[in-house]
Structure formats: C-alpha cells, structure tokens
Amino acid sequence: MTPKVVSFHYTLKNAKGETLESSQGDEPLSYLEGVGQIIPGLESAINGLKKGDKKSVHVKADEAYGEYEQDLVVQVPRQQIPKKDVVVGDRFHADSGQGHTQVVVVTGVTDSHVTVDGNHPLAGQDLHFDVEVTEVRDATKEELEHGHAHGAGGHQH
Image (tube, rainbow, N blue to C red):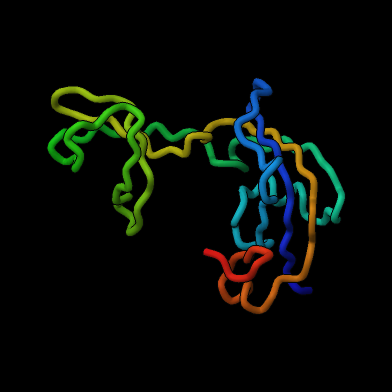
C-alpha cells in the first residue's frame, strides 16, 4: 500500500483549554505518513481518517513532545555564550553532545552563568487537538524519496 500524504486543519489547546496554535485561516498542515513529521500520538489518532472527517484528539505528553527532562536544563559559563547581551527567552542552537544540534532557550542569567533549557516548549504537557482532514492522497515518488510531503504547488523546503 502506498503511503499517504494527509492534509488537515488543526487547533491545538493545552490542558487548560487555552488555544496555543491553529491553522485556521492559513494553509492546512500536510505530512507524509509514517516518517515522524508530526507527533506520534496525533498521527496514530488521525490515521485512517478521510477527507472531511473531524476529530478531537487528546495526546498524552509521552506521545507528544515527551516528558520534561530536568537534565536538559544546564548552567553554562557566561563566556561560552556567543551573544554578549543574552536575556531570558533568547534561543540558541547548541551542540547536543550526540552529533546534532538542538534549540535551547535561556531561562536564567547571572553575572557568571546562563541557564539554558533544551526541552521542547511543550514537553511534559498533554495536548488537545481539534482536526479536520482536508485531503488524503497517495504520496508521490519524489515525496517518498525525500521523506516528507510537498505542498500543492510542488517541491517546497
């Protein structure tokens, strides 16, 4: 069976019911099934839906962005930070020590150290999605070779 490209509109809410993000009024999100382009809990919940289907989905933290990992919060000596006027909320790409980079967020600043957090901003949170599938189609050969969905206008990166 040929993998599918699924396009859908979504509204993402946290456990308090606050809207965090929505595709409404914008282009729907498209993904290639089975390659990890969207969080696992959402992908498994909408797998098999058809165009026009709507569904409310509750995704536990471990099937979304993972549990919050305290060991991803580290203090770095100030002189190791490339930016001189670093402030809470700044984002940097940092070497993960495992051969790739990850985005870290500055959560604290002192005269001698900067505290950075490598957790995804939604780590440790259960998420709620309202989804509406707008299209389901067979993936193209090019999409399968590239490992991701391409937009309606063709190849987009």
